[in-house]
Length: 322
Image 1: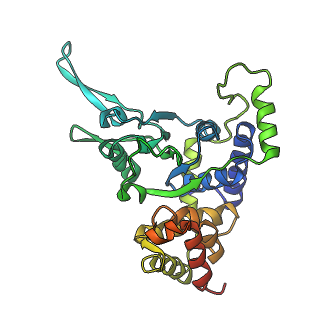
Image 2: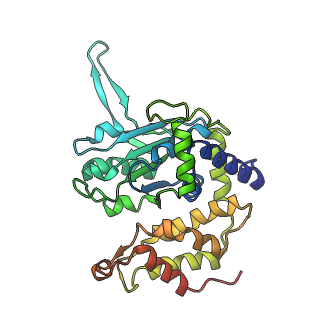
Image 3: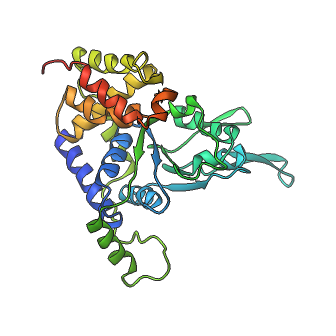
């Protein structure tokens, strides 16, 4: 049981957003959805062209709670041990020493994750699910809170390896990061070119407003938000509808329903509510489900997107009366 109140948690979340906005101009929806994933204790897949501030977002978020941050640049020659770490034999002391990999951190940025082969990608599966890494048969827990934020580039398909379905399912949300609008881009250019040499990330204005311990308290508080059976039924009906909906070749599994409820709880907590509503489910359904379903080939040829199909499902599935 946490001593934090809903009002305190909501206020703290707003403070985190304000601090991030000092470094990352615009992208409010991206920041909001990333924060929801952190509060729900999940991992995030961010898709967008290079140069839109994905690294800046993760580093700014880490700064707000004095968290550790690691970045792995995924490449075709990256090995699983480069991600998790390895043991080395020390001749002097006649013992094996553990060299921890970059996954031992609070926020892990897996940059261009689809550039590494499946074997290396799967090195992340255990830590994303179980918050631990097994090296030489021994389990090592990672610091909490832990979150993987993986990025992939939609344009450069050459030399990429599609993410296995099992790994895609481990991501709580898939977030799209788009170009800023003209006003935001003007502000960004002015900020980045003002008294600054090179293009290093300026995070000096982002203050720590909380601690890892408080983030864990927020996660515990979100887990206590009530979910009425009628709202759970609604989430399950939406997920089950994806499995035989015309236009989709693959539907979402049970983890889709679970993720809808988990993220809806975080959303309710941010709105200072002790219970989730059907609107909480609707508002977060796209980033929760878009990577768990696949378009039928004929729909792809006609230029449809998974988001459009999910929209049509949300329109047809009747929400419970509140």
